[in-house]
Image (cartoon, rainbow, N blue to C red; front, side, top):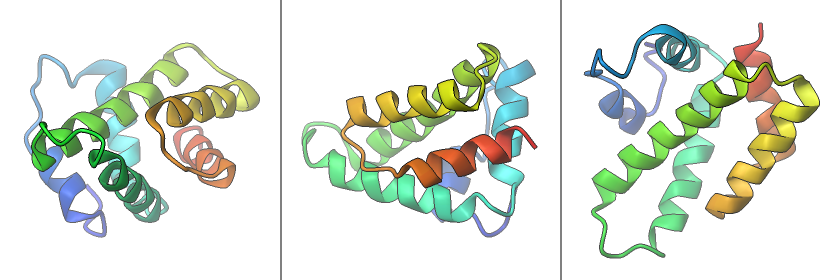
Amino acid sequence: MNKDLPLKVRHVFAQLDPLIWKGSWLNILDILLSSPNMPHVWEEIITQISLNKKKYPSIGNSQFMKWELKAFVAQAVTSVNNNYNKEKFIAEFEKYFLKKGYNISRDIINEIYQIINN
């Protein structure tokens, strides 16, 4: 795990359930956690999660952050497992972030694609 990752990311993914985090799930997560280009992407996602949290006051901050960070990884796994080309990957992530109400730029999504597919 990259030591430059935001503390919230390191905390959520510090102890992984081996029943869930195996195979492609673990491989994609490892890529997202180890890339030196990901810390600022994680920060942007955390910012958007924090802004969106206000819409869900009955859910605790920590639990909401955990769910949303894991949902982001799940979207990445789905995109990889479906063998999306670059344009489809970007389009699916744009839909995902729009549905979540997150303002994540196409450049950030392109970066995610490049990191995963290097």
